Image (cartoon, rainbow, N blue to C red; front, top):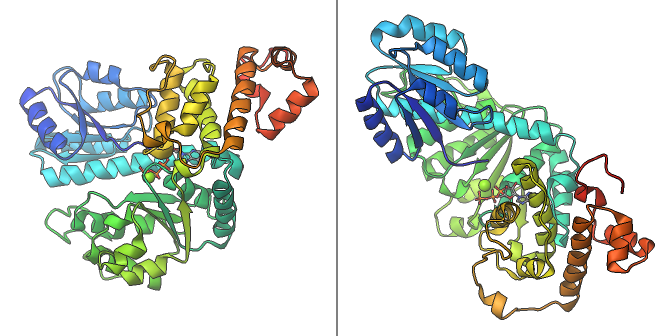
Length: 455
Ligand SMILES: Nc1ncnc2c1ncn2[C@@H]1O[C@H](COP(=O)(O)OP(=O)(O)OP(=O)(O)O)[C@@H](O)[C@H]1O
Ligand SMILES: [Mg+2]
């Protein structure tokens, strides 16, 4: 899931554009400003992951016509309208026609930020839903890729935990795959048809995270102009994914503990206890037990959440996963960029296996993208690390296997998955070639250019 929040801002008044751009950028949004709605429309694609913030009254086009045009280009894009007092009827009609919400001018910055964040959260659920829909037929091996013992153990753990539906903490360094594991815990559970609701606890003030999680009643604080259903309620019967839980303010932790223990939620400013049935999955980069020993995380919450825990090792500690993950990302990248996979040379595979991967799997994914696009030429432009010059714990067998695998892949890539041509090129009997492909879990069909070609 992507973290940048892109706002397409449309207003014919340059002063408004300038003031809003500055304010939104300071709040961490990326702004694409337009005074011309036609140009703005052109920048919107069906798969755009942005939120549109636009004026309802502009010289050549009104809010309703613009909304209609945006919906035609990208039907699920949240559109937030800004209206002057006199345009309220039009804005109300726009909501009926599918606009996400509207704000009255002059804008109250904190209201705008909350509404934009809401709109992005909506967008996020939809992309998770899309992803889950697309992934619904995947096996656990296809969902969580890797050949290392640790990944195999994690897959087994996921299947057991998903069945029992216990609260779980996922621990892992940056980019190791915590979100994939959280998704898998939901996807392979009986709750998979129910909502998977994610919230990132990092970088939010105490009051925002509180109202995001628990919701609020109308007028419960100065800017609560509307009732809001919190994510805990939204996740009812499904899974609540608390990402970066280590950054959750202590006061919010206490309230969350109450929800988990008593299985009820109370909206901010409300006086009603609403029953909820949720599985809580929390992810952390930090060691929560250590944090709680230092008084930086509530011990009671830690113990309550830590019914089960999954630890994802750093990528450099599971070298066997580098190649299968790389192939997976290359394949996805080729689909994304509509191109053919380049040939992976032995030295390149060796470089991948030897690299330290400080950014873990996410870094590998980026390298795969660059490889497919040919950005780094023949090399990978990997940062030099100590282990590249001085390999620690050199594993001869592993290196040889890596080399053998690279030769097989190279031949298959050259022959576009043709077994006869590959066995000839490698001077290997076909039977041996098939055995080796099986050993390394290589699928010749992955190398075919089109489905109609002979193999
Ligand atoms: N075992 C895996 N199989 C398939 N894809 C993976 C695997 N591990 C990670 N990925 C992919 O690598 C990227 C990073 O993974 P993810 O976002 O889950 O990491 P994270 O631990 O949540 O990162 P961060 O700490 O930055 O939040 C994503 O594109 C994800 O799909
Ligand atoms: Mg993550």
